[in-house]
Image (cartoon, rainbow, N blue to C red; front, side, top):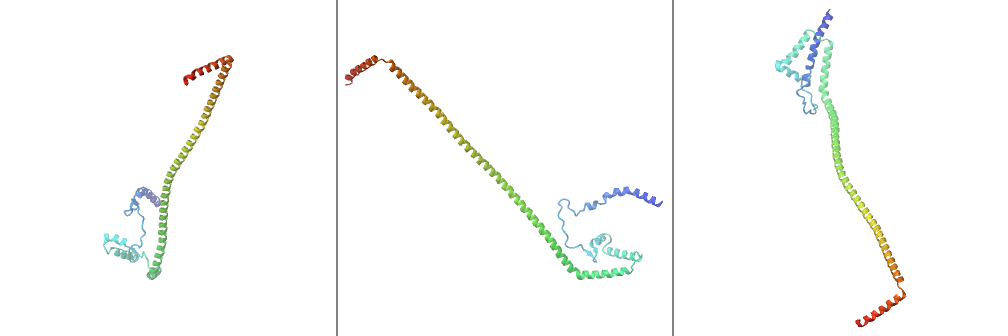
Length: 248
């Protein structure tokens, strides 16, 4: 009977818990001390927070001051201790005194050995932190050097682009020179062939003219008879004789 009643009460209370649960972490997620814009690097506190009586945080006393005043925290502690002891909720048996003696010994050890151990541990922490800082600085310097090398490589790549343009222009000039040289060679060879054809035509013309002249002369000579030749000679002599007195 009671188990069924308890189960029913839990089932009735579950929707309320589910509805309230999303709002329970709002204050934690939206902490006022967290910068959600710049996200600065968190610094590890060097000294621990303030405490009173060796183990009570200062925040507890500040919490009571606004509600109970200065004596509130102390009265609360004394009253709570008195209540626990008077109602025998906390029983002071033999283990309590053992714990009390251990507490006294621990306080004495902390007072005597604490500063030396604290200095040793602080030195170790500083060494470890220094090695981390050194590694971080070396990493940053290495990355900066890599960035500078990359910028230099980009600058050299830009220079290579200019060099490639100059090489392309040089190759174009070489191609133009080779083209002009070959063009001059072609012009010379064509001129030689044309001169050969012209000389061949001239020689052929001269041979034809000489042959024609010889043929005409031979035909003329062949057509002249000895009587015509003798008459022509006589007429020539007569003309010469007729011209001689005039010229004298």
